[in-house]
Amino acid sequence: MCATCGCGDGAGARIVEPGTHTHAEGHTHTHADGHTHTHADGHTHAHADDGHTHTHADADGHTHADGHTHAQPDTETLTLETRILAKNDALAEQNRTWLRARGVRAVNLMSSPGSGKTTLLERTITALAGSVAVRVIEGDQETTFDADRIAAAGAPVLQVNTGSGCHLDALMVSTALRRLDPHDGLVLIENVGNLVCPALFDLGEDARVVIMSVTEGADKPLKYPHIFAAASIVVLNKIDLLPYVDFDTDRFAHDVGLVNRRAQILSVSATRGDGLDEWLDWLAPTRQVAATLTT
Amino acid sequence: MIPGIEVFRLTNPGVRARMVRFYDQIQREGGGRVHELAIAESVVETIAARTGERTVHKIHLEVGRLSGVSADALRFCFEVAAADTAADGATLVIDEPPGRAHCVTCGEEFVVEEPVLLCGCGSSDVRVLAGEELRILSVEVSR
Picture 1 (cartoon, each protein chain N blue to C red):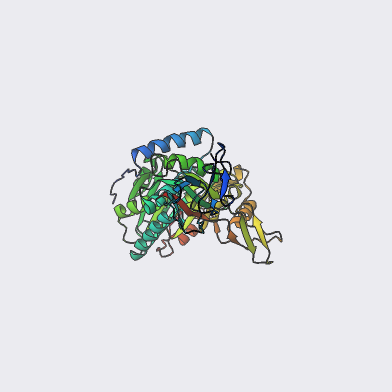
Picture 2 (picture 1 turned 90 degrees about the horizontal axis):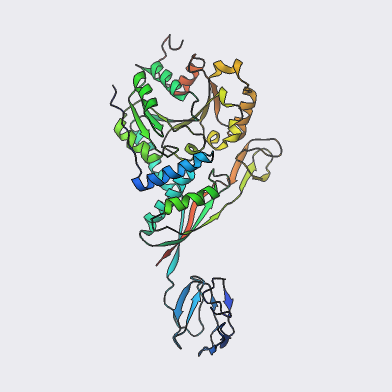
């Protein structure tokens, strides 16, 4: 390697005295034309005069006084300036357009495992039966346990097993939507139980719900701010257990407000029925309210 | 009423096997943050759609500190996602712009470390200005 001009060492640009420089191996030579240039690192080229080669850092755009040309560097840098999730976001937008054209409202339900969202879905399906068409996309890493429960509750359901994937994405939902073929009403998308990953992936939904239960602890909004920040509404489930657990509802409401000023908090008990009317009012405002909707 | 329950998978077997191994490792480490793998796959796919079979030498990303994506986890996941693709072995350069926000109440502009939006004045009426970036800036490929 040449210690003077830095040929091939990748150390960045160096400046060579016009006319002559010394190589590490000890030989000296003179450039016939006496030109000066700066090398970047990496590319090689032949000089027109004596045929010796240098290594340049990269396409550094230098010019030569005598106008001689080089062979092209072997790499080039392309400016992309694109969002990493552009492909998912474009697909999500297609889903959204497709759903709107059919008059279907899609809601993305996100929570950690065990928050009771499948139970809430079962209650929702039962309550809306005969009034609003409900279809469900179930996202789980493995098994069809949840989909079996939804099917038993009486709603068309499609299970998406993501395997090791920790969230649903717009492509999975697109495929599932076309199979479910909704033409009105609601599509409820139960995302994979996870409070981190689903927040980043737009599915084409109209609204995002974060469901949390009082058994999980009131510190969740600050521990998982991204998912709470992405929520249109926060459902606090299992409030029937409040007398038995240490859960500070005021602190929870305060902390949700810190990461998301807009999200309303609905307190419900999916098993006992508390707050279900408010939940259904938000979810399906056009439903026909029956006199004995909840227990 | 019930059209049936169907199970389908969308990833190819090779990718799936790598994801399973990776996911197992994450679980052993007590983590659970694996969305960086999907992000890394999206990086590889997006670049491939633009540059095809050309060998990728260097990728310059922007991953804001409020984006919810860990740059370190992304580096690890990138190796998995890029294996056997044109981006295999490519250098990943990641800029991590800090979070910046503007307080609507007092007008102050300040640095945000966490996506918890609270101004020093006590107001949470805060608009994020920077830090949520998740972008591919440029890519160095063979000619």
